[in-house]
Image 1: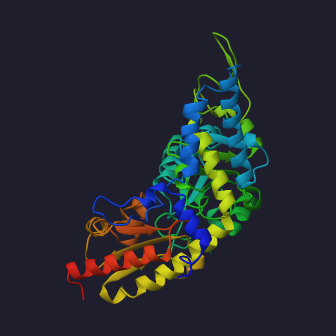
Image 2: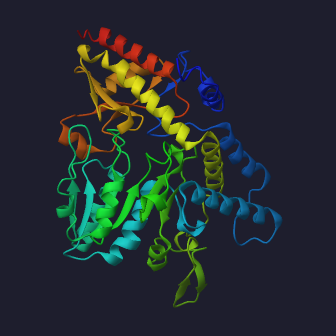
Image 3: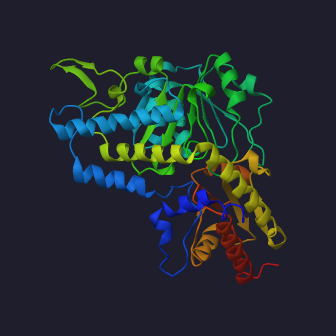
Length: 416
């Protein structure tokens, strides 16, 4: 098979210790749930261990060697992220716990200051709850209207009336890639029209930044939110990119230590960005390890990762198509190049959770449920779906195992 014969792909698999360990049932682990969280390469694990065993100290305020080394590594990781997405400067990268917190930061710090009755927020029908619920709450607090770009049955956005929908919109908050449908949102069409209408644009990049090159200057987005754990980094760390002029004008999200310049009993002046938004002791170790993940992905090459996943997705769609006569329903855009490595499906009338549990007996890990997109599920008429998602460490033989497991499930449930 193409990817199995690729020495680079073989080396990548060897970088992930968990993939060498069999499941408790003695099966080879076939991990197809990277849209939920990715596995971690040895370089990231080593970076965590190295921090805690050789230079664990708090940052910014210490003048001793360990503290200075920790500060340099922490701020160095910020610089790595800035280069990775082509931010103009490191100060435009704010550390958060995840993309969810990054989106909430914008909602509280920018949204409450800038929205009022008569304004509108525009999002889409594809959104993860993390890029929907904050805007519902913001609309309720400010009196702004919440509008939606509609999606077709393949998860592709319908943009014919976009200019009309943008009238009065101050914020467009939209995903880059649907975590349920795998569809890629055409930001090159949406962002210029949003700016022409006077809106700023926030992009939920949790599903895009691990899988394709992202250049925030080229995309011309105003905010970009990401989670480290989906891009080979640890859990509990993510970041918000924001244009300096917006961040400078925004009030702090949280208050406490490190985000201050001077505190008196009756008043406080705030630190400059990015530290204005990073109250308290930061997640030092995981930020440093995310920097190691960025190094790892950069060394592999984001263009290679994207091309590898297109090949895998094309192969998966072809193989899964053979099960359509037995009741397999495949969702999302039909062409591999139009989607990310995410395929949601159902098999006959088997509930997605039962199907995922059966696949697990064969060592195959897929997600099952509504994938934090309940409104989209209701729109599509699906109570739940199973979802297979691929990453740089997957190969065609993983897909072969998935298809064989689905064939077995069809036999167990006596599907035609």
